[in-house]
Length: 349
Image 1 (cartoon, rainbow, N blue to C red):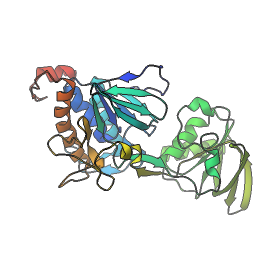
Image 2 (image 1 turned 45 degrees about the horizontal axis):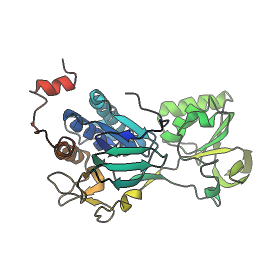
Image 3 (image 1 turned 90 degrees about the vertical axis):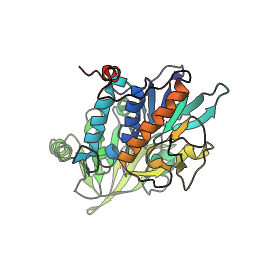
Image 4 (image 1 turned 135 degrees about the vertical axis):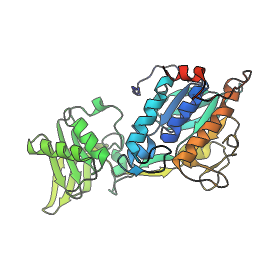
């Protein structure tokens, strides 16, 4: 499934449901809603689908998904993407929902941090523990360079063409963007505190090949200071075993991991319990009609923070969402194993 870029027309997006969060539970919600002829757009602050599974634990084995004795976080994401392909959802990555308004006609108006507007009848919050916020390197004055020279994600690769780039980190994100940006950068340096990486072995091998060919630089150490003028970076000082060295760069991409914060959701007028959203266990609806919460972000008596629990919640949420989307249409419960109608939607021959 081809994921759309963030370029968009001036007009707002109108859809049945907006799902906030494209982790496993949000992805499975697309499937359950799709069976009921409900169209979805998904918004995620990350630059890829899969939530925690794909961003933090892509190779970590998961053992409690029914029918799959063992599956990695990335493989589970890939399988879910394949499963929802018949319903053609639209993804808006690298975006965060900043505002939510209830309109007089019963619909919701959401606006993201890139200025995109959405109008929908149902909102599904599947944002895990909240929105992911990148960890900021502990450098004095780094805030003054953020958004002009320091970036915590790559929204458009073309913005980094011909830049002198310093990528900081040793995980999959750092190595992936090192390999992706190296061909278009004027120069690229990878900095990690030790010569040992948590990324996929083939990515590390490719990076070392580029270093050996002189096409990029690998440094082992830590940033100690930055210098520049008016938010435009000119250089970074790096401390290593050999001492301190200043390198001339104009762009820094730190990948120090992520922290979870509830973010703007906390200001939406929903009842909250310790930064979680209470829901009923019949529909997984919040205190606001038409807004649902599924997955780790919700709470109710007996709640277990398991992916399989989120799948169950998505199924029941979809039944109630149908009543908002099609208020005059009777909902007929069907099984995928026996319904030719559902099988047709899924493309089953």
